[in-house]
Length: 75
Image (cartoon, rainbow, N blue to C red):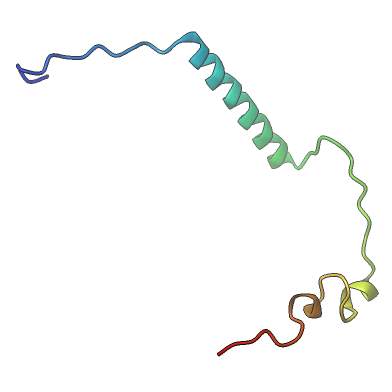
């Protein structure tokens, strides 16, 4: 119920383009969510395994020395 000095303002109806855009967005997000949930991919990327000797060597693939090398300063 509105106050006597504030008449109700009619609300515009949603256009057909809005509903189409919302349906398309829901389809895209839903499709992506389904692919992410099931673990599927759009293509078959080649995945190589990095040998343990490379991973554990100093300065190797993402080793401790890769992230923490040398003096970084301080106070």
